Image (cartoon, rainbow, N blue to C red; front, side):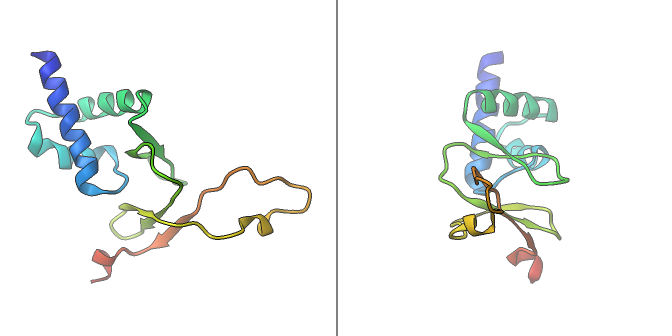
Length: 125
């Protein structure tokens, strides 16, 4: 019974990511997955996140000064938009061209992360 419950709960968590289509915090995961898996609690969400990250199903999305969020692994290179009003994080397609021109002379660019801040469409209404 324990394995069946865990599988059902893990599936509800996967569906939460699919439905949302954006990076989620643990509390957002719980809110979206709970209707699909009664009895789901925050401890199970954290255990599932840890297991799914270790299995390569999820990756952590880090924003300065914010608790981590998670998104489905294996996506192409992209960036994020953080709504300052509702605190939700959204994926942003595309990448600014030629960031290398910003790198000081003699330095070597190896990676980058661009985070846009503002208000999402829902919060502007």
